[in-house]
Image 1 (cartoon, rainbow, N blue to C red):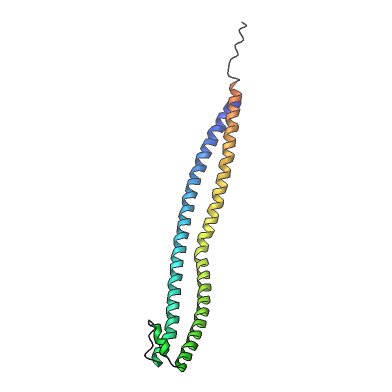
Image 2 (image 1 turned 120 degrees about the horizontal axis):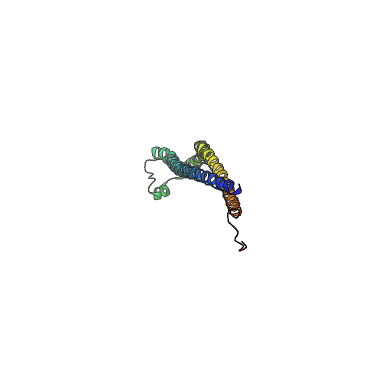
Length: 174
């Protein structure tokens, strides 16, 4: 009876192992897709943030130079030497405008950084949840595969032990 039970258990555990391996392959494939989607999304979000930072920086520079160019037409932002030719009132105006622009730029940069951090989290949260869920499933399947392996070994041992019942004993005594 042990031989039949062992053989049946070996067949069942082999079938379960194949099913679990198929599930594991499917989960790993999904996990790889989700990981790639997250990397692509992070790359796109980083690009968007760099673009926003560049636009913000350009806007800050324009807020410094545009009023000064209107008031002092000889100022050229591409030629810093023109700043040397300013009188003291223009120099003070430039310094004040520059400080104000830097202050506004720092505030805007902080607001944008917070916005992008929240936006990034909101965009990535569903993928992170899915990745976590898939990782848990993967771990569960791997532990079940390990148990199936142990059951296969036990069934094989049971089959081998009971094979002795079918082997005739030749003692030479007739």
